[in-house]
Length: 196
Image (cartoon, rainbow, N blue to C red; front, side, top):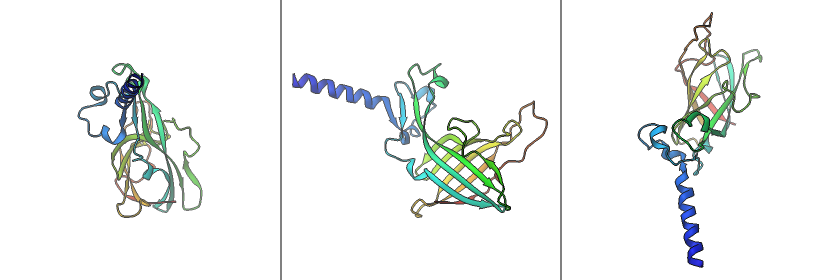
C-alpha cells in the first residue's frame, strides 16, 4: 500500500512540475510560445528572479520628477493563446505604474491608481536576465503616438538600489488620430532611478 501511495505521489509531483515552467527558463526556449508551451499551465517566478525589480523607484529628467511603482502580477493569458494552447496559461510578469510631476509640483501624468490590467500602464514585454526587464508602454494617448518600449536596467554591484529606465519611442499612430503626441519620456536616454 505504501508503494502505491508513494508511486501516486511521485507521478503527481512530476506531472505538476511538468506543468510549471520557471520564468527564467522561458528565455532559454527556442522559437515562440506557440511552439514551446505545450503542456505548460504556468510560467512562474519560482526562484524570485523578479523580486529585485519590485518596489518604488524615483528619478528625474528635464526638471520633472518620476515615480515608478513596479509590482509582480500573475497574468492569465489563456484567452489570448487558446487557438494553439488548449489548456489555461498563467504567467508571472511585472507591471509598472508611473507618476510624473513637473518643476512646479503639478502632476502631469499619473497611472498609480489605474487597475493592474489597464492597457495604459507599463506591462510585460520580457524578463531578459537578472538585471534587465522590458515593458510595453502605451500612454493615455497611445493611439496618437504615445507608445513604445521601456526597460529597467538594474546597475550591478549597487545592492539592487540603482537602475536606469530607458524608453524607445515607437510612435505608431492610428489612422483616426488627427494630431501627433510627444512621448512622456525622453527617447533613448537613460533616467537614473533609485529604489526607495
